[in-house]
Amino acid sequence: MPAKPPDQAGNPGKAAGLSETRLSQNKPSGKPCPICGKAAVEASKPFCSERCRDVDLNRWLSNSYAIPGKPEDDQDAE
Image 1 (tube, rainbow, N blue to C red):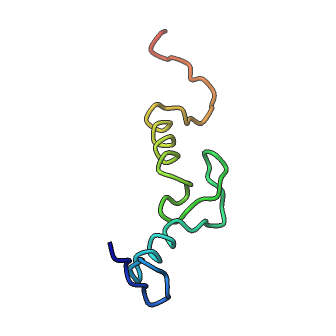
Image 2: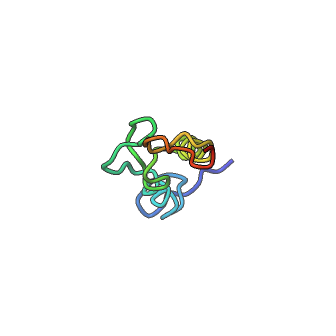
């Protein structure tokens, strides 16, 4: 089986531009992931992976995120 020809940068078997796109999407950004603390990546910003995005969505949908407040008096009970 013949080897793939090198791309313009001299990388054997990689298509020019394809690997650059994937690398730029997985490049870490400055802020950490709010779920696990790892470096966030552009493709899943502000999270580090699709898993952490799903964990956050599940927390929203299950009402795990809530702002604490004073309990209201039930005016209808009187």
